[in-house]
Length: 319
Length: 128
Image 1 (cartoon, each protein chain N blue to C red):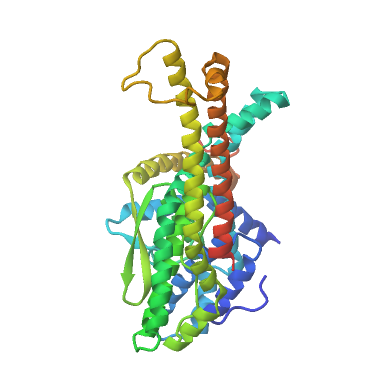
Image 2: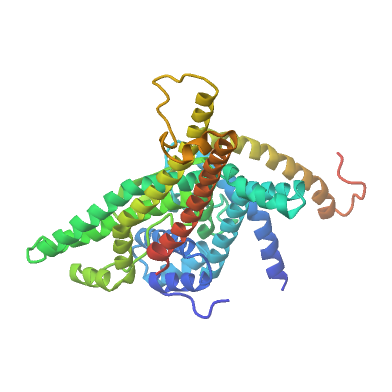
């Protein structure tokens, strides 16, 4: 099976990483975390044995790297299949119900209203403004304080604390991204070499690309969050506004006196559109436009969620 | 060759059993337990080989927790990184009761037919 039995925790983790090579990096991070925790506990429980002896026992009790890798892949695929089932069975039912392609396109266009992902992505887009402001301020304050304090004795521990907090924030953000967009993100922190001195750890952090992509992600969340928020709010309020305005105009045209005077008007009475807009067909077209804008917004928001999930994975996990 | 067949069979058998055993272990204790601690409780009473490797329990614990059958909390530890403690939820206990019934049914059913195979003398099955 494996060429040589691992003699240290690092070798074991290396072998496990190799066995999981082609799989989702978020899964690899979780598996490495679990293994490291367990192996360290095992070594702590056997203080009178050498690390290599403990590891020889571990391969028997915890499992060889390939066995453990296989167990993770199997559990993951079973959980994924269980979660994906309702969605795919619903899709196939839809497909079975509607045969022709033209109906299929409409079905797909308005099917977004039945997709949970559209609403969770919408929620993520709205929330992104606030998380974005928070992440950005955190990074801006943390980085500038780190640089400012670098000449003082507390500069180094502060920097360590800052990076540690930034990673924790990235893990939490990952959980949020997975819950809202469905992108598989790590559930456990990344494993990193231990037993280093303060300076070595700082050097390690500075060298690691992921440190910088994490900080960049958190800083970028401000402009991204603003953009997501604006797209979602403008799209939905424009759509809803057109629909409601058409209804109100129709009611006013039918002679209903609305409370607080007919305050909503799509055009002023002098505008050339005025006549056209008050025509029933015009109102119908406006309402239809509102429905289309709302639906397109949901599509856009869902696509944004998917794109952002991939982006978060790239920045926070893959490297 | 024979050995790998036996291993593959054992793996197929274990597919749902790991989750059942983990729920049972957590239902049997009143205190929260963390991964390593749970793994160490899975020693068979006769000192033989455990049914599955300790490394296989972590992903299952996580999926049980994601299903809401286990609750978990993180507790800082003096001896290293923080530990995740698990506890069975009321839903978990309900699921466990269902699974135990299914397991008892399966075991009786399988026993009924395999007993005949291990006692070739009585060809008419094992109705006592």
